[in-house]
Image (tube, rainbow, N blue to C red; front, side):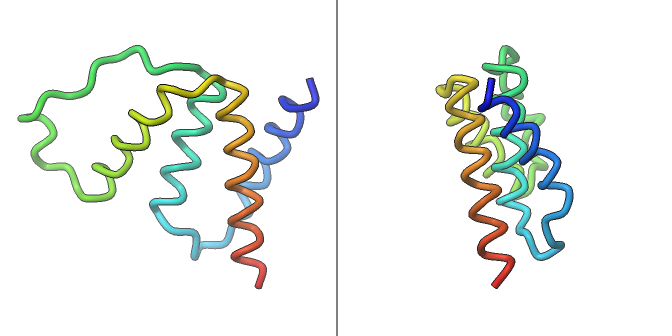
Length: 93
């Protein structure tokens, strides 16, 4: 139960990350948050034609999505907490 409480606590702290947090870091946090709260993605990836207009960052997001599918909810919660701590440490100096 302590992990879930810590996860919720750090999910609240994400709202106060500085604007200098990169989009890639935000996407990583989003992917980890979704995995921790919803579990493994159960939808198909978009076909190539519908993905033609994707930007580089959305391509990175899809890569993170694929990687996160291999994590348990607890692993995703732990990584999410670690990432938020890392971003707070980098942004507080």
